[in-house]
Amino acid sequence: FKHLTSAGFARRLSTSTRSPRILVTGSLGQLGSTMVNTLRSKYGQENVIASDIKKPTLAQRSTGPFVYADVLNYRSLDQIVVDYGIDWVVHFSAILSAAGERNPALGLNVNINGFQNILEVAKAHKLRLLSPSTMGAFGPSTPKDDTPDLTIMRPNTIYGISKVHMELLGEYYCEKYGVDFRSLRYPGIISADSPPGGGTTDYAVDIFHAALEHNRYTCFLKAETRLPMAFIDDCITGTVQLLEAPAESLTQRTYNVHACAFSPEELAQEIRRQHSKDFVIDYAPDFRQDIADTWPRTMADVAARKDWGWNPLFGTSEIVRSMLDKLAPVYK
Ligand code: AKB
Image: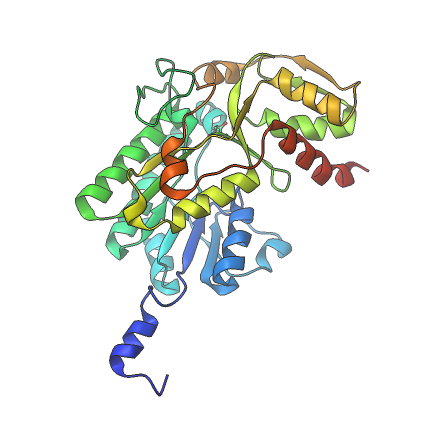
């Protein structure tokens, strides 16, 4: 930088002129690796730091920097932010709905204390923080169809309660301390590359593996349980759009996002149409049915579309096509 004046040098080093450095927590979960790869292709391999408490495979390590990050340990998060010069955090570490009901203490600890640590680090270092919420933040008294952004929120699961807490605390820190907090309420996310873990919507991924392997599936939700869903490609595109959106364009800090909605029976019918007419589904509802019964059937996402361009491309039939295409070679 010999030719630069000191003002020019400072400008060169400021975040507005260089690529942001991004930390992704929970990067080995369902959404993490796709998110990390997408961000690395936009911002450069070295500028996206993947992190988790699990050990990555060689393939997962080979695409760029990976660090151990326990969200329950404030000092280790603080150190990573300092060592790597982090500007933005995508906070994926969370215990999902079914796992939270199985182990409430763990759910509360990770989702509340882990988020609190991330939020404090974001405040201390003036980071942009994107932490997803979920349709699970709604509850039995919420209107079920076209659920708006702003409505009754009285969830009765550990996951839902902890995510409402996250939304409110993030918005409080944004208002009070200027933390650039952003969140979107995910529907069930369907992906072929990484398995989901501990969710109520996991059936909508498991069903494809079972269809290709055994041509039959026993579903833990009832046939008619319709829930909002989205394909991973739309989920990642939308999350990056919200992450990158200019702060002035955001009229709120938490947004519903919706792509399509189907029930297990409707999904099975589409699998029969596209894969095998002999595909058999039967039903053995368990405790996850009680969770699903409290969630919306469809969500209104007008504000996400208007403010930062949410525009999902995959409906039920496109999701089924993509899942079958991606997974068929695995079961050949
Ligand atoms: C779950 O089922 O817990 C998640 C979610 C809807 O947030 N997939």
